[in-house]
Structures are given as C-alpha cells and as structure tokens.
Image (cartoon, rainbow, N blue to C red; front, side, top):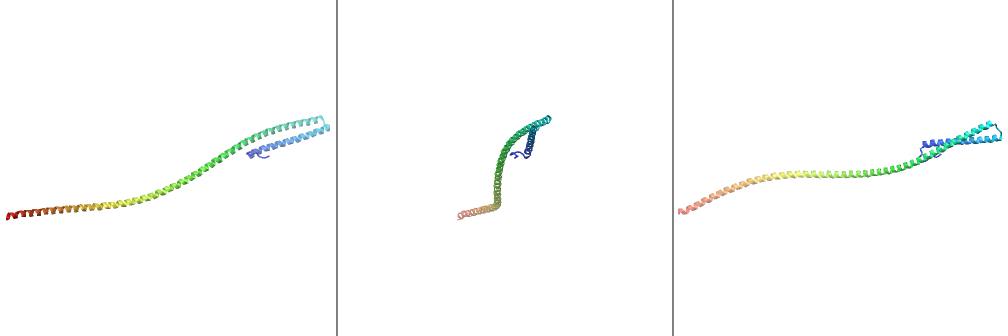
Length: 205
C-alpha cells in the first residue's frame, strides 16, 4: 500500500499494518465461512445428526457475527484513515504555503542584506576618501602654518630692524637739529658783530 503524500512513515505504517491484519482476518473468516458452507452442503448430502448440525450452524453464526464486527471495524478504520489523510493534505498545503512564505522572506532578507552590505562598503570607501582628503588638508594646513610662522619670524625681524633704523634716524635727526641750532646761533652772533662794526665806522669818520 502506497504512503500518502505528507503522511509520516511511522503513522502510515501502523495504519497500513492494521488494515492488512483486518483484511487477513476477513479473508480467513470468509474462507472459513466458505468451508462451513461446503460442510453444510456435504451434510445435506450426507445426513448428519441434529446436534452436529446445530453445532456447525452455531459456529457459522458466530463466524458471521465476527466477520460483521471485523468489517465494521474496518469501515471505522477506513473513515479514520480518510480523516487523517484529509488532515495531512491540509497540513501539507499549509506547510507548503509557509515554506513559500519563508523562502520569500528569506530571499527578501538576503537581498536587503546584500544591499546593506553594498551601502556599507560604499560608506566605508567614502569615509576612507574623506579621511584621506582630511589628512591631505591637514598636511597642507601644517605647511601653511609653518610658512606663517616663518613669515612671522621674518616680520618680527624686519620690525626690529625698522625700530633700530627709526632709533638711529631719531638720533641722527636730533644731531642734525642740534648742529642746525648751533650754526644758527653762530651765524646770528657773527651777523650781530658785523652789524656793530659797520655802525661804528661812520661815527669814527
């Protein structure tokens, strides 16, 4: 007997074994009934005593009752089997539906994971580019800062030189002013002496 689709091997095996046993019992009972009928036919042909006939008839009735009981049990077992097969079919369809839903969800998750991984790689690459750019800018800034420091040193030196020049210029200017004042005073003194002499000469005449 073939195992129904979706029916577990253990459950189907036990049910099939029960059916086979019931069918064997029914076949044995039918064979016994057939033999009893042959015996009754032979008894009809060959006269038997009443007691023997009643015993055989009683045995036949008992066998018929057992056969009917076994057949009823077989019908009930077949009904149970059909009900179980119906449940198995429903469960199989539900399982298939859940399997498809799981595979679809798994595919979606894998696709999202690949997209996120791709985005992550892109972000890492972008961050590395930005970091490299920042390092280059820092190097440029450091170079500019060094240039500024050098320029500040040069400017400081130039300022110091300028201060020294201004100090020398002031000293020179002061010296020139002093010389000018001395010369002016000397010139005035000389001019006054000459004017006095010129005034004296006419009086002497």
